[in-house]
Length: 471
Ligand SMILES: [Zn+2]
Image 1 (cartoon, protein in one colour):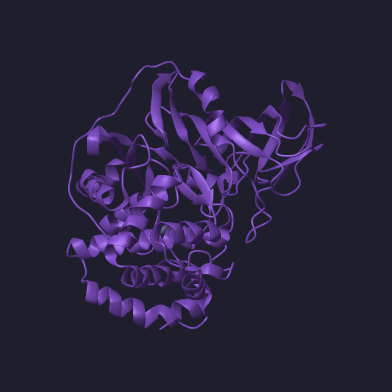
Image 2: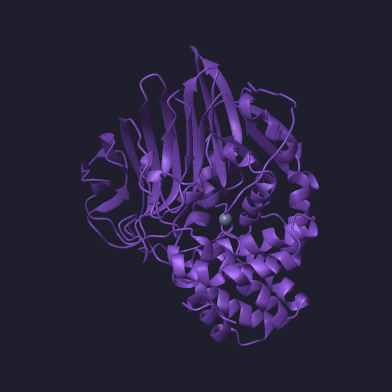
């Protein structure tokens, strides 16, 4: 998630795309299910969201959006693992969506849907057994309350504009505002997302665009997200999108989805290949098979996997759009390929992305190292007072300053303590050696101690948990 903001420029190229592959070929997905097995857990910060009764391996979402009546009709096919022996399972699905049918392994099963909990009467499931759950549903999606006070995030999940266009940002949760999900970050899964809407609009999601066809005046796009992905890192946007392409380091495919009204950000988006090359020098090889951005009518930004979601409002703040774009790309290493298994450990994402963003800003003359250091020292206490310390922040202040800046300040101090070469080696090694992993604070401390040969637990725990700003 972005912290502050910046801006952009001029006009550009245009491609739209009818390609014509047949939608849905499911072959690849079956073999990738093993890679999506997760060690699921109940969240210590937001236990009402998510439930460790389910390990989803793959989501197949077929969505139809009626923008005139604001009705979403969906069929969700979940390949899942039962982590334990049990007789029912629970998923998250907002109460604005009405469930019509639920089948498990082809047979209709009972269910109830109190509040946002979809409880499926599965019958006896053996521990570690695998099943296919199909849910059909429809309704007018509504976003969900954000557990914080940030002005750039009014609510979470599917957001419908008055003109029927759609965008989404959903950290720490909110996927359940538009599909039945295990909406907690320890559960990673792969995705096939098929979106149908009016023909002059495009349904955009993350992953590879497999097909884009118009039938009977309706456009259908199919995206495959083949890398295991936590639900907060999924994105959807529907509107008059145009597709622009680029090429990143070593031939990496890069895609930008931009509405005509936001075409002025294209020159900034086209800095992506240079940003990724710089990030590869600092963090090692880019962890996924593609990159890019979708620009949506919002005020924040999100590190959605392989396709970051950028709020167009950020372009009003000068340099911020570029800095935030870099920040979201940094998260592909810190947050996306290696992900905290619990929201308590948000600092494992934001402190590192902020740290990398600061190094990029210093290297590119945006702001000096001295300025940054002065500012981090000056405001550290304020951030801790308002949001709590970065490693045990207030749960009613998700994404407040300390997880970004106080954590980044700790990393700068750690670099001084370890020496630049040792710290930089650690910075690269963590995402490279935890590809597609789920982790917590203890994992990071143990890894850091092993890589650097230094005892770090006391230092790190003090900086993460201190109410008073460490000197
Ligand atoms: Zn972030």
